[in-house]
Figure 1 (cartoon, one colour):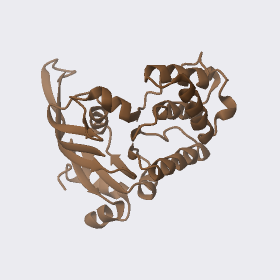
Figure 2 (cartoon, rainbow, N blue to C red; figure 1 turned 60 degrees about the vertical axis):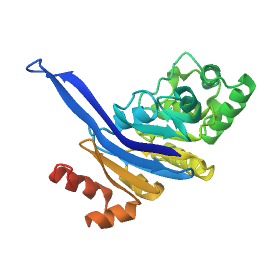
Figure 3 (cartoon, rainbow, N blue to C red; figure 1 turned 60 degrees about the horizontal axis):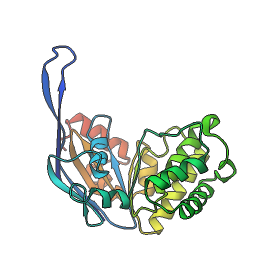
Length: 252
């Protein structure tokens, strides 16, 4: 289970015009949980605090207040255990063109302490699931963005994590490739993994996610099944929820 309790994060930045320092509250007391076998949709416009929240869950940043645990491991006190338990697909693909998928997965398997034989076997299994096994030994410099995205997903799942964070997993993908990724999400749900998906594709959220949380101006709204959120706001689509939050400054 992923448990996020009352987390806060602020940043000190320089104003571009005045050059004076100012404090920005990126995350203001967010709490939610994700159970095994559940897909949680974490939504929000750019700059709302969504990516900061994901990075704190992944252990790449520390909350200044509150706590985060991933299957009982605290992201501050047990950071190494969290890394072993959690897979994180960020928007930075980090795919190296001179390597083949097989080579890249082998290297990352070593980084993660996965036995080389196990890493190769699981890597090939994931590439097959992602319909990329025919390209396992092709250098990635010629890969399309969709193929690179698939390799990044395989890399994030290589150590067989119990919890998974997917930040915009279908961005830039064609319809068929996106469907392959969504099918994999369904498999992970069936394997009792705790999954958080951040995306702007609202129909996918309404179809795939068991619950949804919307971050707006650093605060969480909703945290309920999609149908309940639509009923709460009296609208027919999640896009309309965004419009309502924007209209009243995220105070709904």
